[in-house]
Length: 128
Image (cartoon, one colour):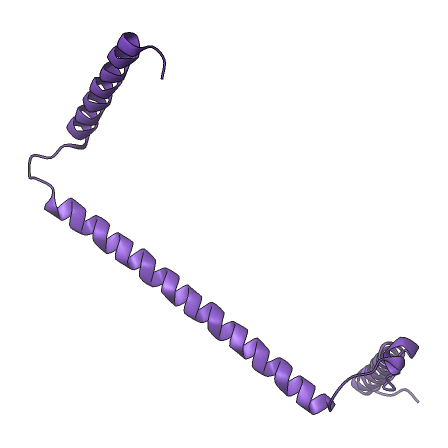
């Protein structure tokens, strides 16, 4: 007698699922034996205090460092904000007829005048 196709497919699917579960269990057992072993070096190390106390102190130190980093970031952001505020204020206070090109030209002229004065002094008194 032949069984209906649907019954055979369901049985085949159940068998396949069970094979996959067994295979995954074997892989997990091989990769994670569940019996951790301390190495010889680790077993010989001497540590002060209880493990819970050491972990607690380590966690406190990590939290302290995170807080310092957070505060440092906040300080840096505040500095950047104040610099941006000062820059905006500087631009607000410039005269209405202010032109960046004209300002750069003026600064260049001042620099050229200073260089001319230094050349004249060098010509009069020799190299400094």
